[in-house]
Amino acid sequence: MEKLSIIIPAYNEEQTIHLILDKIKDVSLINSIQKEIIVVNDCSSDNTDHAIQEYKEQNPEVTLQYYSHESNKGKGAALHTGIQKATGNYIIVQDADLEYDPQEYNILLKPIVEGFADVVYGSRFVGGKPHRILFFWHTIGNKFLTFVSNMFTNLNLTDMETCYKIFRSEIIKNINLREKRFGFEPEITAKIARISNIRIYEVGISYYGRTYQEGKKISWKDGFRALYCILKYAILRMN
Image 1 (tube, rainbow, N blue to C red):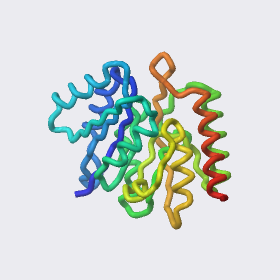
Image 2: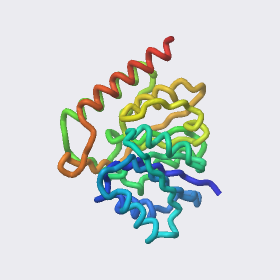
Image 3: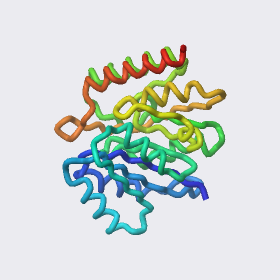
Image 4: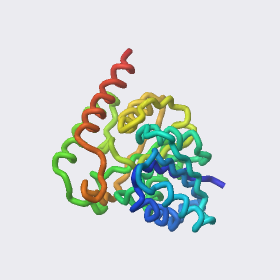
């Protein structure tokens, strides 16, 4: 029986972690694919730990692995832990907030299970799905970072910075990932682009963005870090 590993990096998400877990629990995957949820708590300073432990106790039927970092290491580090622990045939990243809809897992899975793709990106900028209208400069920044990334990877992605990326597990598990914080997206994109004969697809997804008052954490500083990572891995590739 095939399995999808859903990796959730969590930092101070006590208000939404049970809601996203409920959404994942309600998803029925195509081809009777099973779900494995892996939550990595990156040393939250709120009650995220209690919220997850309580959810596990109240939902014993949910296959949920829970790991906790003893110090705050960053989103990338939480993903490294989750990828290492994953046992599924496929791996997807799911933020602990409510910006992305787990009901769309099947949209991302379809090109893989039908034998066309090895990696699928969910783009917030293509297709007819709902997209909350927020932050003009964030949108410009995302498109600029995608453009620069594409220049060096020779890909034609529309949304390199998207959270929703699904991989055949043997591909991502064999990549040496180094970025501990918000450099995961440009790093993984640069490194999968180097793989010979890799088949990368992109599908349109919904985006229910949050404001900073609602808990959004990424800032302009992370955008500069992403640009640094794009250039860093481009130079390493050339060397």
